[in-house]
Image (cartoon, rainbow, N blue to C red; front, top):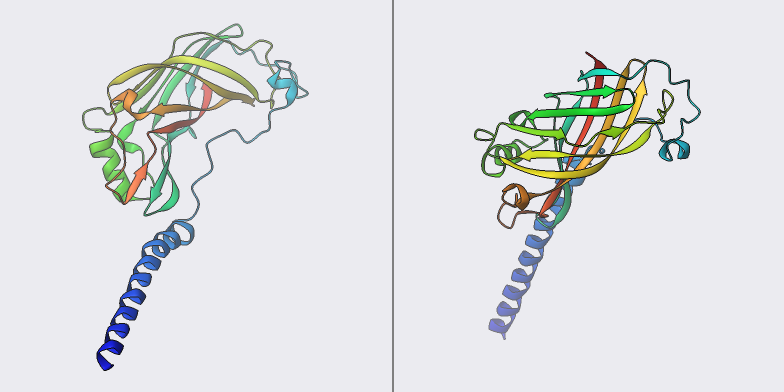
Length: 241
């Protein structure tokens, strides 16, 4: 009888220990993500709100168009670019975000048409809130020593007409060549633009399928798994050069 009780006691402790392990395996990542790390930064975007008339191409209800757009515009202070990738960390959903302000580029506008445009990012300057993630990004994922720069170059002009009023956000489509990890692909994506004072602000996001750019899946064993794609997001401030 005592032997049977000992076996039952041993089994009970095994079950309790197993339950504790499960609670720790789920609870620790949950607490870390939701209470220590906190929510991911909001997507990069413009602060204003696009009006229906702006999206449809009319000038909106802001101030008159005013200052001519024609000329060359350069990326200015306050510009940012980076990545956004959904990941699962030890069974818990998370969003990995890395950003940099080391962005350079330009726009050329003739009359009311963007005829040329490009921007580049120093890949080694992109950082998240986790040094371990950054080490993986710089090394096996993006190999920033071999491929130090990511670039986008516009290949089709963008008509801005009718030019919206100052403070009105308008949506456009851009087509160009995106180069990441030594691979170049043509991409088409939506972007939003707004004139604020003497500047032009542009935001957008470009879907990136990792395999298309020779980028290995960022997953790290079974502890961190990611989708096969992510988002390149940017917010550019342009001032007349």
